[in-house]
Image (spheres, rainbow, N blue to C red):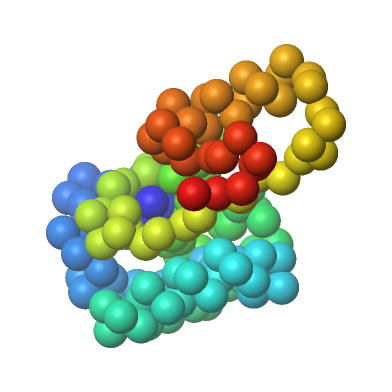
Length: 140
């Protein structure tokens, strides 16, 4: 998901593709915070021949979104970040970002019979498709 300042021209006329953002200033996360996420996003960009021009780094998504709101740049964040209502930030959907696959892993003790855990596993199966998680907790 692309996060832009509300005052940005992109807030009114969203870009159609990443190629329109080659000259944009980006706020980015540190690789050390989430190496798997960082590496997957950067590999996705390499496939698209896109390299963001990073001008600021933030330690977490709230910090990154705060910098976007302060108009220090734009950011690419997980779609879950749009659940954080952040004044001054507009979230935009870009099809090229949707194609970046991000796996979800769950782990739990096989002896755990918590109803909350079973509800969570059921929700994962519902959202990601029946059979997304095996009865042993192993991905299929």
